[in-house]
Image: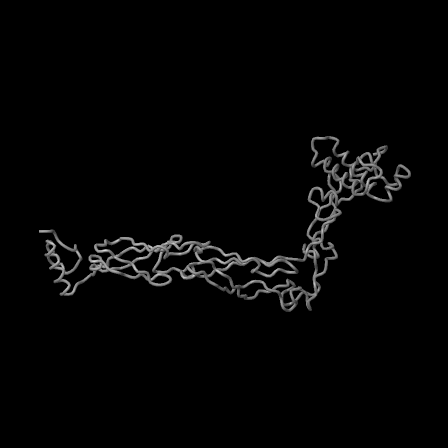
Length: 373
């Protein structure tokens, strides 16, 4: 770049601050990088020129010499080989891979590690669905190590910032490419990318700071929950490390089957068994509901399969409100055999009804009555 003013190349004034110079360089370098600007045949030479200008103006000594003499001893403006002749390679990396911290330097990684989420399940009865319930579960999860007080080191010593990567978890290496030198990053081999090292790891937790332990968690189950619903307990999971937030606990709610009921939303469905006589003459029967017996009046002449409804005897909705209904289906219990007295009475009933009695039949099987006379 002989004859070119670095201030002119970057488009800044001679009184520009280092921040203004840096911002101008980043903007132009991104614009003219050969991998980005493939349509401009002069992009590579402009990119090199921008780098040479920044190499002078970003160095206080070189900038002072240029301001005084109009040149520097090692400007590198006519350096050969097409290499990047100065500047901060960190700037280039930040432009294309993101600035990981202020000043173009990767920020130190935090030691904090969040705890893991844990899943478990709990069984519920229909009474739990009606009233809600306080439940507890025993779960295996990460808890702070008591041997090192969760610090990770013997005697409670803390991890130290890795000397190799300065806590960033990554180290740089410079590679020669067709556009010059390019800096890439890789996981630090000293700390395996963690950013910290531990001289004497705790033997109990192997330096992690947490161990697995059985913990009892208590929680409230609201009325009206559905089978398979999941309860989210924030912060009740595994312990975090070095200030990391604890994980969450997810509890799957499983409703145990009850032979008395089938459920659809807030409606409960059940069955009542009555005798042939009760179906004919009517009766008052009771059904064992969740919270006590419910009485139903069976009208005379009730047919099998008839449904009777008790309003407000079902389950409550999840977010409050009127209980659903209890619907029972009437089932007539037909005897499979009759004693002599029952058989005689039934024959008399058949005769009084004008119906014939099937020969060889001793009960209801094969048809209750024959043809009418």
